[in-house]
Image 1 (spheres, rainbow, N blue to C red):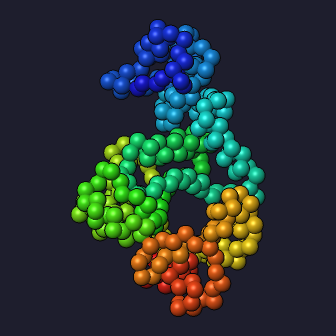
Image 2 (cartoon, one colour; image 1 turned 90 degrees about the vertical axis):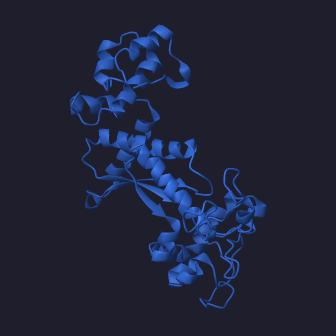
Image 3 (tube, one colour; image 1 turned 60 degrees about the vertical axis):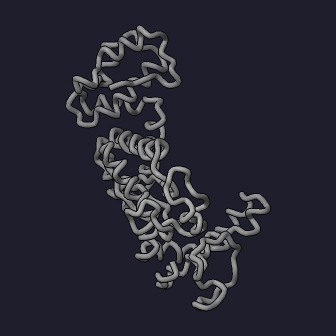
Length: 297
């Protein structure tokens, strides 16, 4: 295991070597927070705290550190995963008694407009660290799950540099990613190709996650109840959003994006009065999914 102090602030190389001597990735031994506290007196200040915090994240099985002691260290840690996890614990304590026992869902988002990269890894890794910290703070007594959500209904804005058949892809700019043909020829769409690459990427690192596709969620009706609630509270939503936007963006902003029924292009358009007619001004809008018009998605 290799841990480097934040922004490289080890006091000196000897100090870093002292920490490293307590753990070797080749031997499979991971230094615990307890070992760092008692056996590494050379580590001081921020470096010591960070080494302890990161070791806590590897110590979930409880075989090397007593649960109570591990939780105590986690509650005092200044590392950001624990700071964020403590906020979640505080929110849970504010919930009414009837809400006890509910699972905590962690979610990370991904736009599959290009191939997965180190930034994609970071999105899932950071969320996993907060989830892991939460499990330490709650003694793993609260059920959790992590969702990796793919925004594969987003419109393709530009042709990536690292794909073949660029001219073909360019003909489908603006369409939902699951409506753009796969330039690699291995999947039904570019979005599905990138989703598969993402899952293979995450699986290779052993992440524990549940994958969700925006396209599948809309088409299945999973979002219907939430979309209906958005429509019911449309004016309140706009009242919150519009003051936060610049004038140009505010003039066209809508929480619902229309999809042209002929070109399948996702349009950035303002709102319009909609009576629910399949041939009216709102025909082809993404919100059509709430009225069971999947062919319009």
